[in-house]
Image 1: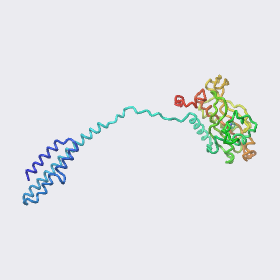
Image 2: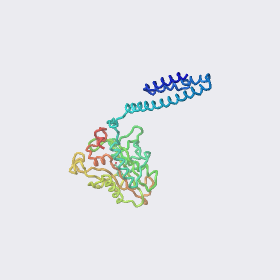
Image 3: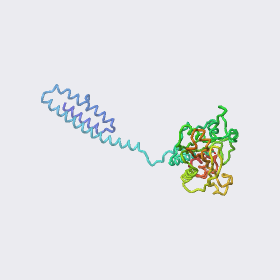
Length: 344
Ligand code: PHE
């Protein structure tokens, strides 16, 4: 039995020496050291020996088992390190490799401009109206009647306004001013709101005009509001929006829903005020219409004009973007040419 043990020790030692993979180590453990392994099968036969031999062979078997366990553990350590190194080498990532280009979408320049304008008016204390008070598909009642626009006003003509065949009095709104009425019907003064949105006009398209475009409506109604407030707020807006001084002019004008009415022009930056096709030779581009809310409009929504007064304005988002970024054709905003859009 002693010789058998010596042989097991010699065989196992050789196997350990020759082991290359962690799989080989598992096999060795199984063959020699497991419950059903060679060492254990010898131990099972110890019971047939004399007491003395049992002691000697038993302790030799234990000694060999311990030595083999230690040798296996040591060899495993070496193999494990080697295998790990190989694995790390194989799975190495070169973090200096250039990445894959993933084109990213951008916020449309008109949306950027709208957001910027809305932020400015937020800072001046105006809040945004909900969509339900500023619908694109409107009734004549909100788009014209309540804004003091007479039945025979030329703006109502089909040449100017898109009528829907849903019902005879339904239009694609030609201005955001209907939002004023929706808000005043719902809310008592003080009122300080803005309403951005798309509007539609049946017009010939050119560098300055498109048959749909975007406006931002504003309305402020409170006690003791004067033309001075209107000028103050709009001048402050222009200063904040352009971030630099721009030549502007207030021109007296007419809107049925404001009295008195003004329009504000900003000097054309495409030609520096000399006159070009964008400003049709005038050197100026109109950016907004405004005025003191007409007494008839206030009465229509049940606000007492003896107590309250207010001003309203409607600005063109495309015009404001053109003047800030020197875009010389309004149609560029709608062509979806990535070379144009990526500049913003
Ligand atoms: N709604 C007018 C337009 O589209 C602009 C405007 C708004 C004028 C509010 C006065 C007050 O031209």
